[in-house]
Amino acid sequence: MSRPTPVWPSKQGESVSDLELDLDAMLARFKERAEAVRSRNMPPIGGEERQRFLDQAQADFMDFAIIGDAAASIEDGILTLRIDLSSSDEA
Image (cartoon, rainbow, N blue to C red; front, side, top):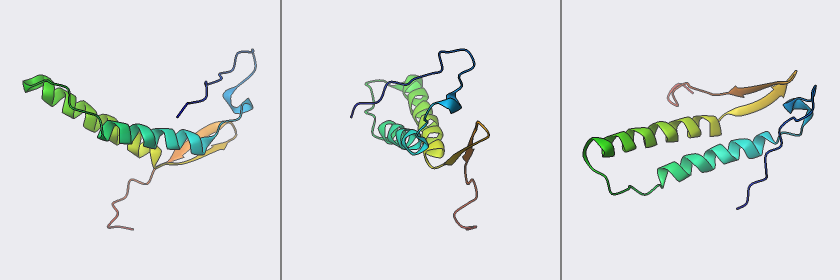
C-alpha cells in the first residue's frame, strides 16, 4: 500500500487547517502501525537488550493503538482527539 506524500504548509500565512486533512485515514494509519508493532518479528537478541526491545514494542503498540482508536475532529483550526480511557466494564 503506497502512502500519500505529506504536504505541509509552505507559504507564509498558510496553515495545516487550510489543507485537506483526512482524519479517518490518519487514524487508520495509526491502527496499521499498532498492528505492525504487534506482528513485528523478534530480532535475534537476548538478555537486557531483549527486554528493552519488548518494553519498547509494548509502549509503541499502546501509543499507536490509543491514537488509532480516537475520535478525531477539527474545530477552529484545532485538531482534537477524543480518547475514551474508561474501563470497558464501566460502559
